[in-house]
Image (cartoon, rainbow, N blue to C red; front, side, top):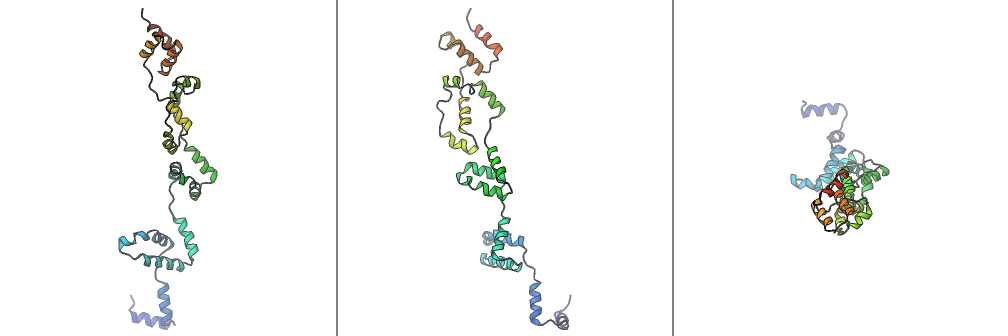
Length: 230
């Protein structure tokens, strides 16, 4: 390690004046890189936790960009590229749950690199679809037989306020009504036989009840036959 006198002697022999030497020393000081400057800006609000003066951090940031040759506009553009965007799944959820985010979805999805046609297709994928088990239940409970569903008044008492919540999970009103129509508890087969014997319901209606109770077609007539007392 050179002593200060030796350093001074060497620089003088090489023709460096005091002023030039100070400039060289200043130029060789380490400065924050672009990545550090971006993190510094994003963490201004945490400065007080470390006992730092936010105004000094701002000055360090501004001077740092200038030292790298960037003006304020360029620094702002670089800073924009450094913001962390939420995953597309979060954006889809935000757009589904909050109306004010529906218009923001496309710009943010574009920021993640999704072209408009892809992001629009992804939004359609968030619409809830019934499971195979649900579809079977819909079929058994006559949801796909409008005349029977209307006769049995399966769509009555549908709570309109339920759509406030159904919309947020991506369920259409049509599908929500199908779930509603299939949710009712049914009379037991024994109760059905009693109503049939007392002529409250017809033979055909009893058959529909047994079908809705998931009794195989082969057994329906036989169950009705043994329900008669000998």
